[in-house]
Image (cartoon, rainbow, N blue to C red; front, side, top):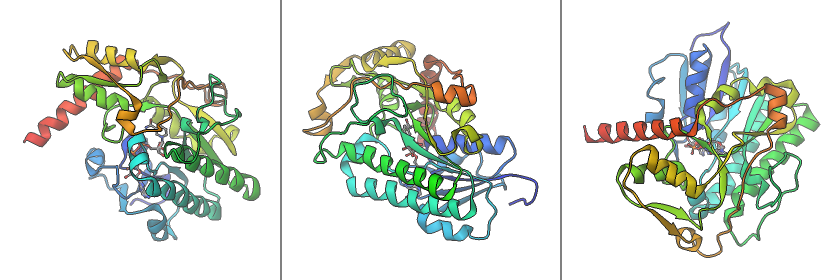
Length: 331
Ligand code: NAD
């Protein structure tokens, strides 16, 4: 690693979907980057573009274990993205979800607080739970289902992260920004943990039916990962957001049914749409929310953020990436 002069960023979860795009963006602007990732849902291939660059260092393993290697390393900003992510994963591996999201965040906050290093904590729109109020504002009440439904454990574990981060800001003056990500999409996102767009694109490319959960009238707002990471790079130092929660994403809603149709049209696919009841997709007692749209006033006031990638472009790029991956696996 090069020394003085360059800023050094630590990215946990840097081999994941959002993390790998962020690493590329930081490298492009000349930062040194240290990645901690246990490759549980992340992939080495995601870092193919930066692997041979000597300003990038990868530490494989859990965040809490690898932080000790960094005791004497100067770090200027931290992005904590490592987490157990995805509806399917959360339902199938609840212990890991809760422990990863709470214990690893606790470890990184303690590490950052000791050095007073600016840090961004990745939270999620799931934290709002099934609140009926829309759009979601950062100070709104949150509403969860009963604890017997595993689905809410992800939201609650991320809510604990938020409480802890806010407590570090208040008690110890830690410069921390808590970003509630709404649906982020783009190349490298994988469908196997329940993410909707890569699932739809993969099915459309094969002319298989696109499985729409529930009646498909539920709405979400999708933001391209390249817009998200353009914004993320300087967010830990954004003083206006220190000690605060901020929504992050796009605020243009689309129903899941309309998304499925858009994918089919954009890719010229012959796929049909197939409705799958939530119970069949995720087991009995699955609780979903109808509309999820952020109020972006706080984000826009602090950063002037305007997303640039249209959804159709994202769909095309996700498809191209998937086709490239399939060709690579055949070779
Ligand atoms: P991802 O699964 O691709 O990335 C998470 C990364 O963290 C993976 O590379 C995984 O291997 C790593 N990881 C998991 N547990 C770890 C541990 N204990 N130690 C070290 N590494 C670990 O998911 P993503 O979509 O890139 O999500 C990144 C962050 O953004 C997460 O915190 C997630 O909660 C948040 N988020 C994402 C979205 C979205 O739409 N993608 C929405 C809301 C919130």
